Image 1 (cartoon, rainbow, N blue to C red):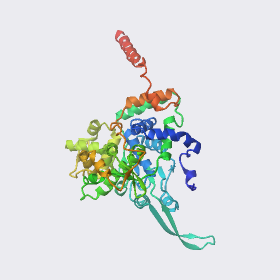
Image 2 (tube, rainbow, N blue to C red):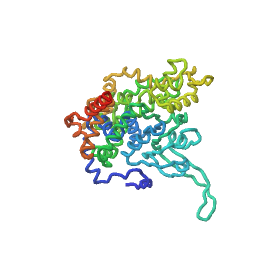
Image 3 (spheres, helix red, strand yellow):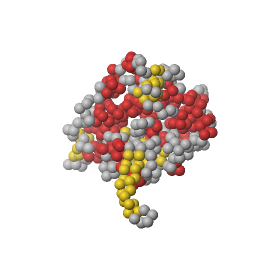
Image 4 (tube, rainbow, N blue to C red):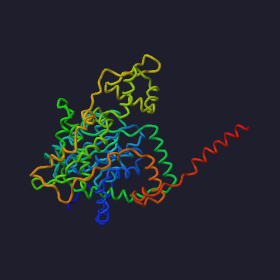
Length: 481
């Protein structure tokens, strides 16, 4: 095995051979489970409450470090919105994660290493707010940096030196900036945490639960299995039989369609890669390929929601589009009115309005005491991906079947197309997550999720009934006084 010079700097220590021997059968069992994606969501929900789509998207971006087309992700949101919590509780499941406090452009220039398969998780990665740092853009686009410089040799003489940093790593980063450099936003996916009052209630409820019981162990049984999955997956390329029909939905007149299309195809391929034990395999020219199913397309479009796609296209946080929608319905609104209509906090509303004004979507009228905001004439160009979401039902099950009938290809004798997983598995179920978490804490984090989910519903607590009863007694006492 080749020595990895970056191993001492990785965030999580690698699994030992003994641990992998124990976890491999469990990981194989999960990879063959039709509800695999739902299980991944449940495992991630043990630490990340109410962010199923964002957690799954982050997981797939990290999984792309094992593929030939790695992705990168920016999670943008205000301070204390949970963006770093999402990122660090997903990247921990992957073996080659570097978590620098600060990542300078000079490091990428002078690393002189192969960064293929490496995940950089950093807060405020350089170059997010402006185009001043080109190293990240070049690394994402070209997969190589070449530094030509002058160095001193052991005799103090100046000699020309070439330093090459190879590979296209995965970048997962967070930022409080409302605007992301447009060049960078075309190369990465952009999402935002849920900043709604309902999400705050869910987080407060989870924090209360964690203070009622001893903490979870560093790794629960299911988390260990999920941690082993990147080691068990075979690095096989993917074929998408419906790609031609998919490409017809992207208008060739829009240059953005090129990168939009690649992002959708990459997410589909990653879902196929994750479900490789349940997908057809074809052997072509001595090489083995995985074959995507329509279930992968369906799940890809559920993960790449319109909010995520619009945010990626325009470099704006998801909450900004809620405001834009309200501004379109009314001629002008104050900050207070926008806050009431959207349910966003006042500080968040002001930050989003500044971002919209800088992008040219909103205008500010400060002629009155209460400043008002209105929509400009600039149109919000619909992402090419969004058009595809509305039209993708043109596909039928016969498409992959027709395509796979080819004399030059042979089906893998061991594996065939499995039944499609439940397409509703990505829907949020907050009550089930909360109950599952309570049971896990009660057992000290030692039981697998399958055993926790099979337990009978616990008897109804008397606490919710007791509190209103006490309130009524107090109110009656006050009335008597």
